[in-house]
Length: 409
Image (cartoon, rainbow, N blue to C red; front, side, top):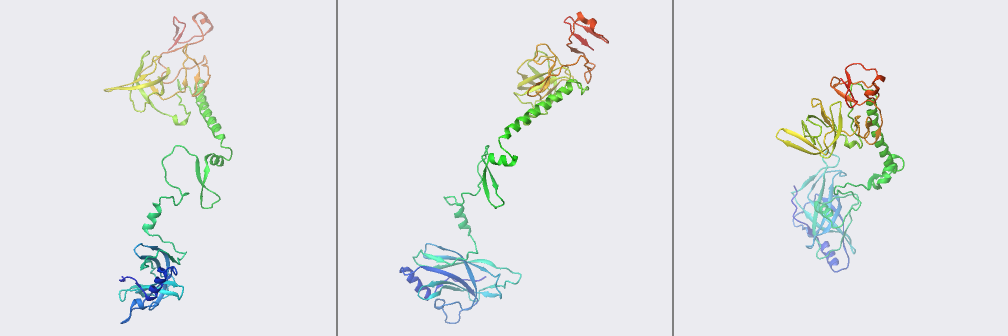
């Protein structure tokens, strides 16, 4: 490692500095050179007018005034184009004297404590910066010939740049706070390597290949399609396309983010009660609508609260339960699309109701009762009374009650 002793301003350098301090000229540094020359006996650095044995020039990267009567010159030493290696033990900073021309302004020599700089055609690449501190007196006006092909920045200069009170890069993307609204996108235009702001509506139109105003129309069409799909499924059930089911519980996918596959066993339920027992409270959303069904009867209920008392779990309802259910098969489903039972006084009696509108499907008199509850007693309302019973052919265990309803067993 070379042991430098500090730069010495030469006699020529002192003469130039006197002119600068007198206001006769400015201080302009032109280049830095390195060599392997060593001082001979009786030879002084301040008397040198050139390096003893120069080997290469160094490119000046930057300069700065330190405020203490000195200046720092940053020079880059690179051996890429060096033909022959040498012992680096001397360097000099050159300046321009308007009366003389280029002079050796300051110099330093490490003597035998040198660094070897190998040739650039070998396996070792040398690329380092040399910080030269030299006296400039009270002048603050300095110019240098900086190599435009080199760009180096010290840690301090980068920190000053980043912490600048004014934004050094007003168009550079910076991380901001989270937002829930979007007004612009950053896009590349014609592969120009730059980011350009693009209004949201223009971006939507570019992606869709048309007018961005069609987006609400498309959303409405998707919403209507989802409702109709629910209606079609219910219609197919009503027409006994799936005869193995007594009632289809269809989920509303409008919007799709509301899709919920929650279901749980109902442990206790009674007509007229404003609550029902459930096997679990996990997944139940207070305020949401659910369907209670045992495969034969069903109705919509809105849960207002969930209650846990020891191991007893109950769901509080906004309205009382209307139907009577078989608790062995009763389930609670998250659904708003369902078949409305044919009970007198209920809107949509005997129809299949979809998610957002109604699709009518009247139950045919030839309804076949089948499925998991086929052997359980089922009461259905038919368009007949005991008075016109002769119009029907009755087989099996069928009887009319006092209200004119027939019981199928």
